[in-house]
Image 1 (cartoon, rainbow, N blue to C red):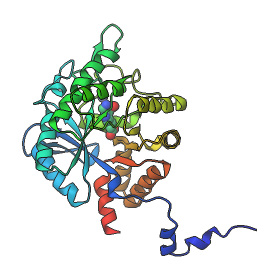
Image 2 (cartoon, rainbow, N blue to C red; image 1 turned 180 degrees about the horizontal axis):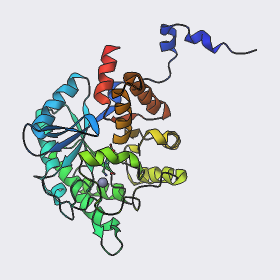
Image 3 (cartoon, protein in one colour; image 1 turned 90 degrees about the horizontal axis):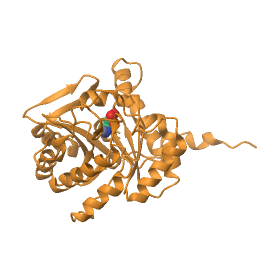
Image 4 (cartoon, rainbow, N blue to C red; image 1 turned 90 degrees about the vertical axis):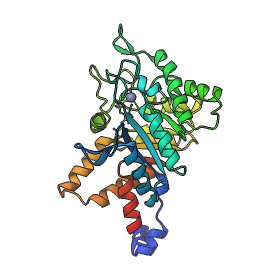
Length: 324
Ligand code: PBG
Ligand code: ZN
């Protein structure tokens, strides 16, 4: 005898009663790109709807976000001056520290996550200090300044630190510096499984962080490696991460599910710039029903095991949820 699966699909009410996965504004972290100046709001050509903003504009944007029920942001800074070690990121008057302070002052109820890396701040565009001899990023030298960057973020008032540089030992290092400075209650969301991906292309336009030589394959992960992807996340958990992340999201949902089943920590996915751009441009050209595809994609992330979605679509999703 066959099962009548269609019985529970026959009307809307019943379908919503048996629905297994839900998307809510509580799930989202919205990325914001801040730079110095005033009244600056420049749309990114490769990401329509995404802007580089001066801090005053970012403060206004937070008001809009709260109106939509979105209370979490992740901040990326674009400094005026870049140098070999990314000094702006280590300075309490640098762009990120200034932005966190100003946003938290204007919106104490906004949860402000900071991306901790060096690629936006270095003149060579790599995620740490360069080891000239080996033409790669020096892991341990970068750990040292990462600990300092974490303290700069913490002192400015960040609510959570998200290291994205893929240096080995970064979670342990940052945890130790935060604890030593009295920030033992500040959580760390690890970019624990981050692949060397072509999907970051549009982000590097907006963050002005394309490497001037080589690529990031000596620190970000090989997209082909499943076992290593799980090991990276489990290692970050052991080092003290509070939340794990898989990035990018769409081509890696198998990894999300597998890590979810191997840990009890909350899991985030980063629905990255290239993923956003693909859906956005398909929608703008009327090739797909944009809202429907966006929502289907978000449900896919949740179904795969994501508790948190970092997405440039967050505002649009919140609007869709308000309408439905
Ligand atoms: C910085 C960083 C990147 C992203 C988030 N943090 C870019 C990179 O590694 O080149 C990508 C986000 C996106 O594509 O939306 N390390
Ligand atoms: Zn980086």
